[in-house]
Length: 190
Image 1 (cartoon, one colour):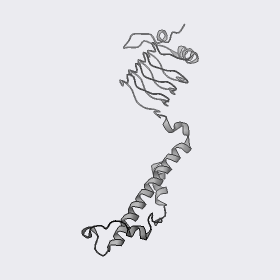
Image 2: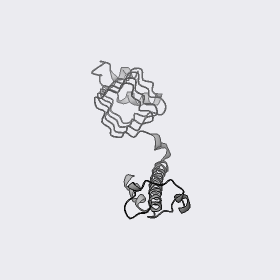
Image 3: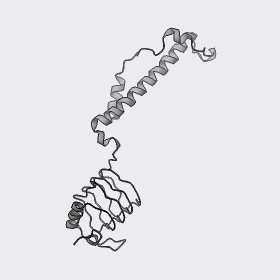
Image 4: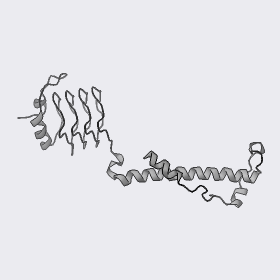
């Protein structure tokens, strides 16, 4: 998006209309003469200063507006969503971390300490959760773990939708090396 912004910014008209008229500029306070470059008289220096400032503000405002509109035009739902696809959190201590409404597709959360983390509405599909400790984590709403590796993961006290629990029980295997709990037992599988 930055490349697009630079390209569009460079296509702005080279001489936009001044914000102030010549009569308004002449009524501005005079600049000290020791700051005026040689060859410029005082009204021209004031006019150049105001014009330069106006042009800078104009370009910055246009760039900010363009950037914001491109984000919302692409997908309004993504404007405030954390995109953490393929992120590497292997072995990280993420106690109480918030992944609320995040996209963690393909992320590596193996051996991570995720106790009390919030995965509400998160997309955790195809993530590696092997040996992760998720004790007391939140996974409410539309959270999805489809295709994730959960060997040795500890889901003790994690509230899951029935369809997610059923799916995870089909692939659950192993013991968590930290807690010693069997993944199937922590998911309350039959």
